[in-house]
Length: 307
Ligand SMILES: [Zn+2]
Image (cartoon, rainbow, N blue to C red; front, side, top):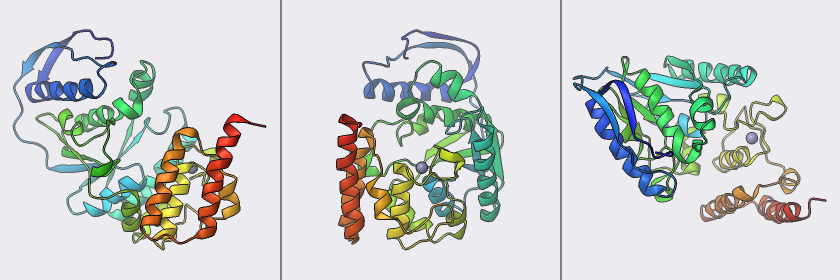
């Protein structure tokens, strides 16, 4: 679609998947008309298989969305799936092993077998061909892993990134994810009824989540969560607000440290939104709030006057 060329497959393709992929193309072409065009492809049809495996998988990176789906859909999930090669670069063995250890321990606590996947899908396709991972590719990549596991899993859940009211074009989306389904695996997009802080409020009750939660992939100073980036900070705020205690994210939050945070331009709006949302929910931490506002101002200054 990016290069606007028709594709010819040598092999057979599941009829259901082939038809569905036109749906996926329509969605992407509508979202990004200047960058992705509908294309045609030739293939030999394989009869759609009947019957799906009974397993229900759920992608599990160990973050807030993963834990929320794993906990709220615990009864139907039979397997959790950890992928090395998406958030973690395939060659980053150190980070990969640490994240994997956390995911293994969490899965074992939750009583689910963990399927461990290694792949170069992101580096070889998304990165090498400059197909944006976040906006376009990651949902398709997750679906690819789900398809590879379809002899065991007939349904695979992709934990949601955004609640219904915040939906926007994004590589994993409730319209797009199911469009990667085939006759052997149905891809489901996770819960749409809970925003970030609702999810955090739910998972603070889980000792497993509060022991193994991992929200950060920056791996600054080799730390499990760096505690300084926006994702770490927002999660710490949510946990503090929900009255939780997390082993992997320290509390309380020190306003002096917050004041010194540099917030990247792309994150500032989200930082403000997080603050507004907490205010609406009755967040009452004047010192911290002052520190957050001052961090935003300071980040503007630093951007234009780095010295
Ligand atoms: Zn971080």
